Length: 311
Image (cartoon, rainbow, N blue to C red; front, side):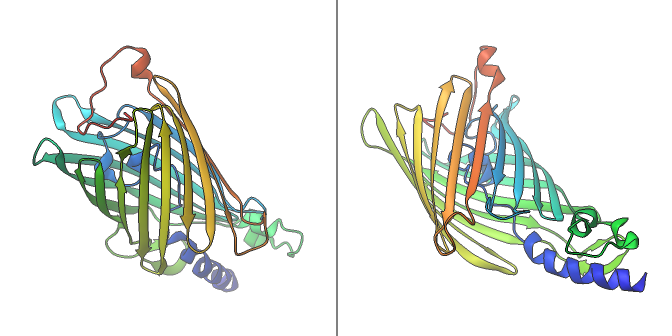
């Protein structure tokens, strides 16, 4: 049993580094709520977004991520919104789950200027599946290890964000996965303080003509045990219906995205990127997203706190 605990501790020490970062998504043009809780109720209200992302498609056991989110405006308080999201991520033998609920408040200074605050709270949990690890033919099977599944204790998490908007300009700061105290694992004497990230983003929605709009976006991510990361993206929109985007994320990641508003209550998107500093095809990433608003088909009026030409 002592040897088992030593082995588990060594494995967990390695995977905790991966667990410090929230799984990346490039669905932010379609679902701004994925950028910060301040957007809950402000953009694409009443939409249920579902997404699947496959990272490192040339590598066996590469990360796979499933996302589900929904946001809306409170019917009794039009300056406040709410949202909920679930993110499940699996990379090899390691998996993690986030379940968060959000509240946002829109403070309007003038007709064009708003300051949106957002707060999320929820739970985080991760798991180590040793059955997958020791089913690899390169390892000698050990019944005492195969029967073990290491689960973290449930951890309370919270996010806080503030986003300023003015005439198409948006700038926001997010402190994500704020936690208090250490988390631990059941049956293993190992403590850790997960995540603790921050993110800054800025974007500008500009209408070139009646048919064409563009929206450049810059994102800076960093946090505890995480190297700072710079991301630059830009989206072009045609007839408020068809979308195309380009993205650069360091170190050396390039990508593109396409999407469309298929119907009045249906939006789809696809994103692809690759790492240019490794063998071509080794770290390709694919992400598919769909947004559905059943209230559009029920002919109910959709309210949002901040007017957006893409809502």
